[in-house]
Image 1 (tube, rainbow, N blue to C red):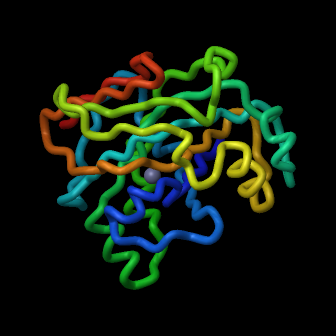
Image 2 (cartoon, protein in one colour):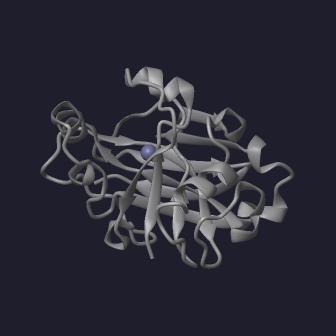
Length: 203
Ligand code: ZN
């Protein structure tokens, strides 16, 4: 399986990092080796001094699709979840300056937290989902999918022009404002519409 991550899908997050608003969705991939095994803590890698959390709504693809039109995109997923796109921000900033790829900053082992998934029918409106991340019980990121620049269906249509989507692939839909650094002993909890989707200890 593959993990497709969308960057810059929430306006306030774009401005907090001083980035330009893209004219089409910006995306990158993480390999399956990036998935943090369930119940495992996240170990801050030795190659970075600044790992940021980015809480994101996840979509699990349920069948093969290519060149999917936006109006049929909803047929390609029936589960929605929540996760973290851990980012070595110091390395990403250097890569951005030089125009280098982002994999060192985004695709390393443990960088993809994939929490619980829920049936999409359990939610009234997928473009009105509340989600949040707390760090040591303090709320640090609060988002609502209505603030996405591109909706879930628009993202699926867009990325499927480039990649064949396969059953089990996971789409990370971008992070809202409030990203920040983790340190040893932090505890991160993610909540999607009142459901605790994950709890991660930082080591
Ligand atoms: Zn992200």
